[in-house]
Length: 392
Image (cartoon, one colour):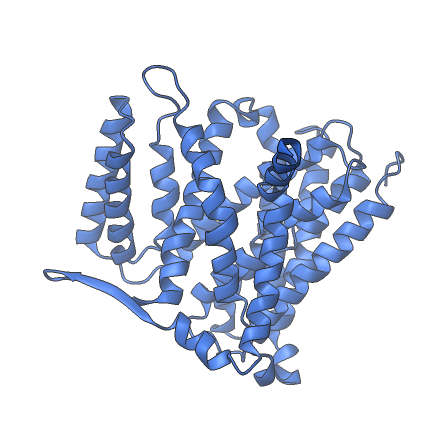
């Protein structure tokens, strides 16, 4: 009985289960939005939630609390993973950084270039150039794990490493290109919060409450500064100590404690809130618009070509080596999976085009279709065509 429970617990906490849960929430959002419950769905997401403290006021629809608040916790977890990798993991050896770094760079440059070329005549649609540059790590890993033992474990490490750089790239893009008017006062408060966390880290303080208070102040100030609030999550992560003064793991404990919330609440809720595409308003014209085509080709074609091309060049010029026991066929299969933009692409889409129905949801539909095609094509390719020992 205990063995069965342990197996169930292991499956539920795995990346595969997380990916399936996202799929379920996506289907649920699509069904609800396109049924008699659609009005209640939109009303639920547009409910205003906020508070006032003196002259400070924060009042936002629930959808923005999810996209600005809960998703910051997701970026916080990415920051923890990044710090752990650089100090104790694969990134500690500079040679292990080269391949995923170049792969992520190609996965940003090529999809963005495709989108820009298609939409170059319209300044407004060009705002969405970053939409096809993102990869949904949970989905991509879920598909890769479903392929089974035919794929060497080193490719999972490669995909995880690539995803970290990909997410850092997304954070930089959000911080640099998707900001509004900047507030000097908010930046000063953010700087003070960062300084306090720096001192706490320097002193080796591991009181979670102190870091929590500083992170909330930092999040609120960054939110009010004009820079997107998700940046606060990854900044906070960099100041979390690796271990306590007694040598007990501290960062790892926080990271593991977030896993349940990310898998069962934060990412599924984000998917449910953002994947509700109203199919009734989509026209053939919007489906074949520059934005829709740019997103689809950027994600489905641009990501796999960009990631593989830059990886191949890094290997060809001996800047990096192939992951252990992997061949180029298998590497290319993993590159296909990076076209699963889903949650991250939907997130950037919301930043680029603030009015959600400006394209009658055809932009969101393109993200879902491109992600679906990348996942299906990637799975079929890896399962049936990438197990050969011969190179391409």
